[in-house]
Amino acid sequence: MQFELDEDRSLLKQQTRDLLERESGSEAARAVMEQAPEGYDKALHATLAELGYLALALPEEAGGMGAVSLAAVMHEMGRTAFPGPYLDVLLASRALHDAGAEAHGLRDRVVAGEALCVLARRETLDDLSSTELTASCADGRLEATKQLVPFGAHADAVLVETREGLAICERPAAGWEANAQPTLDHAQRFAELRLSGPAQLVAGGDPARGILETVDRLAALSAAAQLLGLSERALELTLAYTAEREAFGVPIASFQALQHRCADMLLQTESARSAVYRAAWALDHEPAAADELVAVAKAWAGPAARSVCGEAIQLHGGVGFTWEYDPHLFFKRANTLEQFHGSTRQQLEAVLQARGL
Image (cartoon, rainbow, N blue to C red; front, side, top):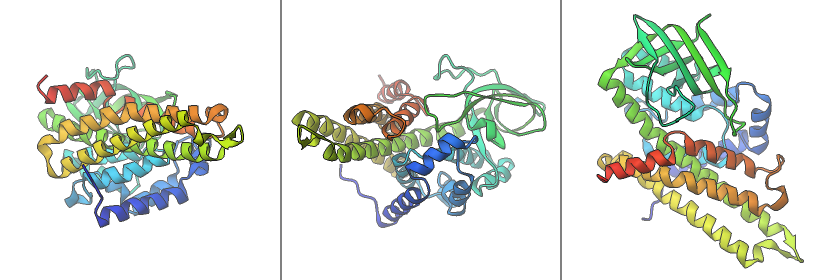
């Protein structure tokens, strides 16, 4: 299928690329990764809020721009391996919006860049697909231990999935314990949160499940778009390097064996592009097919990005795995995103279920 962005979305995508290349290029991203305890550039986060980027996942009537625009922006975020909680904030803002009026005050602060709020859902490290919950919010009091909460140590509030539904817990003076959980990706900040204190239940039962289904759909699409961006940029870096690196007096890009490997990288990247934008279009225009297509996009983009970014390291030769070169940044982010927002296995199971298999 031939897919082209319309003029408005092409402009949004180009403006996003220009902004990120100017404000969050490789050098700036490395500085944040290596030096910022909170894991993101607060000034850039405020700029994104001012430009309306933090409202991108909201319904269009509330300031969002639809799934295709979301995919286009996340595509560009992937190209720079953008560090920080951008996607996590988008997902929290959408959940807060859908939770109703009681949560809109916090939603408005989040999209204005005045508060950092993320979702807290996982309770085990043994099985990331587990949905079993022990967290409880009763009589206005929350008792929960959550694992791998993105940027949880520096969040101002968390939207916690409990047995009763979704509860807002804002950082109190006591009852909020955060323990860092380092992972392969140095640019991400995960934490174990132990929460014991006042909280507000804003959605329960079926409404809460519906909210999380919407969030999961947007999260999978966004992660797939980021994985596409990672693959695309890793391929560009590889082509540039192999064109300038010489062996036996000629560029190594002239070797047919390496050309075949680059061709395979291109095939995987372009296939991911088709899957991602087809899924985004379906979310906007063909909702009945969206669940299956989003699952297909994430199931393809994850392994594809892991393969492409891994090949980028290999084709950079001896310097490919060194800290000073960028391929490892893309490889680490690809591996992280593949496991989160619905792992490849979970998404494949979702596709089979959609097909009645």
